[in-house]
Image (tube, rainbow, N blue to C red; front, side, top):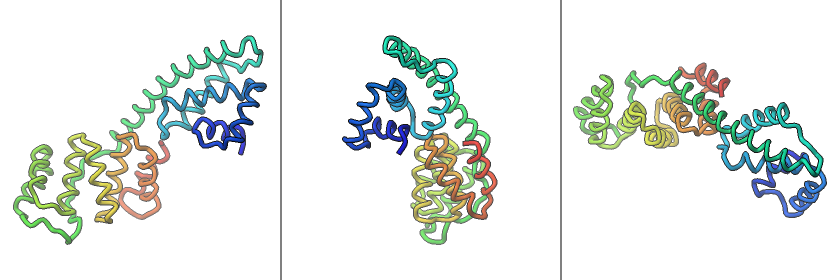
Length: 236
């Protein structure tokens, strides 16, 4: 294990007691190690795991360009304070850009689901007339009405599929992701469509690692979303 990994494990609290002691002893005589520990602690406080690696690299590049590591015992702490100020300012800028990037991905790829395909013959909605009215409202873009109507229909995979899409169109991403996740887990069909919209909802929610897993699933199989999944993965 190299020192970068040890520092990450130390700050995360997963490094052994023996190795933690050795690292702290080394930090007393090696200002660069001490500096990196402080930097890691600062990063840990405000960074989501999904953007952590990219942000750390970005901040290290800024630091190496603007704040050289100073090993003098008299000047090291002021240098660390200055570096921390750069980190905090950069963190704010990065998180703003990162959030904008996620919003852009969702905007670029999200389109309301329009083609009707039965999810499964199991658990078919009993009241077809009510289901059809809800479906019609959805296809007309009257999503709040569709949501109300779908909620009044007996539970089924078909109903839940459209319910999730109604929530998605109404920007209630957490509710949409929850339902789509349940449908994916029970292997409802069309599985590729469920997985695609689940990944988009997860991107919007900032759950990037989960979204990546679903996009990789789509990229590895022949389906209508294969190329789009690959494109998003290349942008994440």
